[in-house]
Length: 244
Image (cartoon, rainbow, N blue to C red; front, top):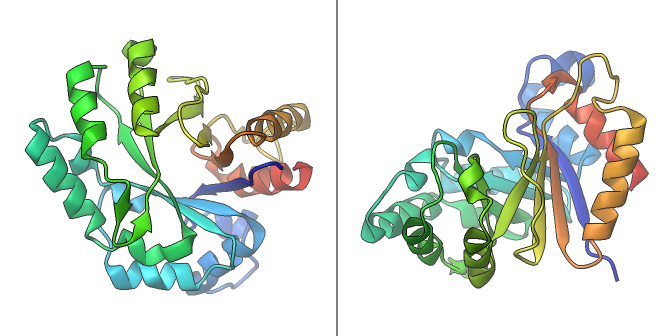
């Protein structure tokens, strides 16, 4: 039996979407509820810059339907600590902000490393600092990396040892192929174009649909249209969901 494939966008507040996605005059406080009715997942990006409160996470969960999931980008502070004890403290600090209040809407946590090269000792310590559970919630972790030094079987082995996923990226600057290291896959599609109504041409969306269906034979799949021609990302996500 195939695993679920959830498709969405990054965030839900973006002014151009008031013209290209949301119904006219829809109140901002209703935007998440509307987006969650059309998509099956959303990656929360704002948490990379600022921690939220437990009440906020709980509110977001309450505005989405059963089966919908959020992925959460971990605060940038958590990926800059060097000593192992500091890593553990910063990870706990972020998780204690209330992430578990998303309940069954909580998908993987994305730990994004923008300016890091592969260092086996560092990443062994970092992955060791990521808990399997928090506040009685099972956690799933994904690492997003942006340097060629991570094209190393030793890094992939570390991810497998800890059951963490490698975030794949369809990106012009830092493309990252999928490597199966966990029981889920996490993809960020970042090449939407303004001259395409659905962001990606139909033939490319068809190819991604087939790819994700193949991945879903063995893993849960989370796929997000991020960056690129951001105004087209909701249309791209809805088009892909229709093909799936």
